[in-house]
Image (cartoon, rainbow, N blue to C red; front, top):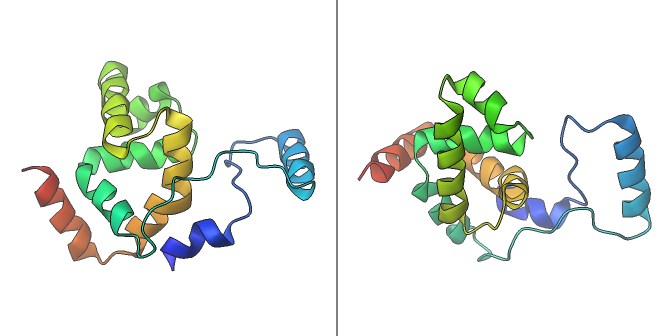
Length: 135
């Protein structure tokens, strides 16, 4: 279950990390260190996470996906054919809606919990979230 991911995952390394970073991270993890902060505790059934997802519009969820992949605002803007200023503004809005202090915290939360949860939802549930976020 997606809600179990934080309990099953021992670490998170973004795809763009180099081999040296990967080796160092694995060594630190083996020694018992945490590389990135864990996502904040939520209800066991994931209802709190689902509520956070419902706060986001479709474009904000697309930005969150790219943020979780480690993309910069410039890359996100190019990918989504938006201005970099608009992406920067939307990233700030995402941080507020998700109660995250910075983009790294949002990326970790997205990669470990929110995106797996979103991907596990039926398509009609995601469409319903879009109509609710437009209200």
